[in-house]
Image (cartoon, rainbow, N blue to C red; front, side, top):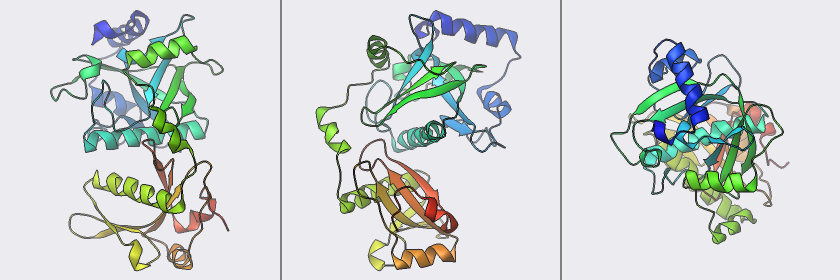
Length: 305
């Protein structure tokens, strides 16, 4: 709600709202280059059509912080299972959060900026995801570029900063921002996730991540690992048509890489619909994955000869 927004942020939003033509939330992202914007209006981040990697992300203006020096920053929780304000997300909410984090991570890895849509809401921001009647109040594009100044999977947070690089918020500003967004400090036992995991544990976690990912889109994801087909998951639509045959590999800092079996190599050479899925930060709530075609497997992170 507007009363939760920092006056400096609200001033920019009101200026753009009053000076520009009236646009709906769908119009905003459509004009920024989001293809099929109406169908994707419920998403939390997008890639602009025609760009290799031009990430657009919604930031809830109520949670945009202004430092003592006037710099804007935003603390993003990387735990997709927990709603803003606390409580468990639904499967769809969690999937949208994971998709958003995946796009933000791609921008961070590529050292690319992020285009931002500032959004205010008609209910208190900490109730936004738990209130089924919640609607967008205002959505405006920010003319200034943002970037991801820090990505900390262990602490389960990322920090987005508006404007020039080279600045980060102070510890006290970070603490206040986490409190404002109701982002809890990571539990002590979460530190164990940063250590090495066995190949079996990584594979199981990666399989669970991908199964939930495709199920979130209404697809059937069947575990066929035991059949030794050269892939682990067969993804099909509601009519039973096979869409993807996925060999699954989990990778984590401090753990060994992975190898492809002869059957997986043969499937890679055969091409579509085979894919290699590399799931990073598994196990853990910040798991992300990337798919590789058969011709791209040699560039997959963690692949050993």
